Picture 1 (cartoon, rainbow, N blue to C red):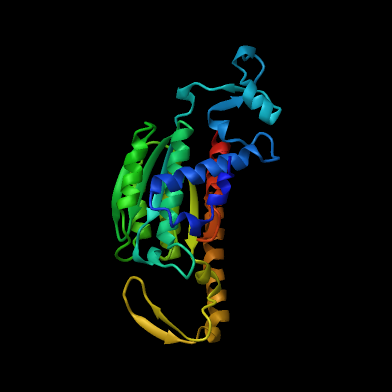
Picture 2: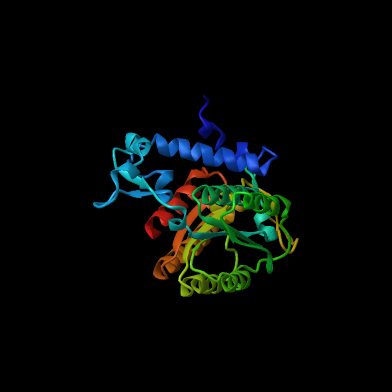
Length: 298
């Protein structure tokens, strides 16, 4: 059988039309990688199993998992794995940007969101979805029904980027919609006022949710390596500017570094997990961050 991880590069995945197929290739490849990992005990089964404790019935041990991990795990009952997970995707116009050879930030974000939703439901957790531009455009409450995945995938596949950025406003609205404590993953370039973004992410924390903020950029947005002459167009206003990127690259790189460092620092200070990635980053990174957070929540 071919190694499904060969399908994981984002540029290759973006050429597959079916979002469901993209999600399944990402998740299957990721699970294959976990099973081959030398890190015993870090396995996709953790939400369906828990470590054997004195007093548990020996007949409840899952010997297949023992064979892979050298540790004793027992099967959990379904009601023990009722976490509610929400994936929130930025669909503002700035997410439509892509440099040559890379998917747009929005294509990457929807592929990652679809894979996360699939992984959540496979884990017997409930998956929900939010999408926004200047305001919250789509909201699907969390459900663990297997058939619910199709509704999430349909919503993601039909969405298009549009409008300006209303990250802070939309996240506040989403936080009010979530009635029960859960795990919230936000995928955005976070091109909004940083103080307001942090305030909105804190809103989830005030309601006792765990939060993972995934800041998604294009590789050139991180390096500004556009060559000698370039014309830049604002994705949201349409305004254009001709410049010589090499003259301002150093100042831009410093400004971007300050921006991402500030978000990272503020997130950490408020108990929010922060991940910086770009559209060339393997999807494994996003899925691993979710699993790490999920594992800590028990």
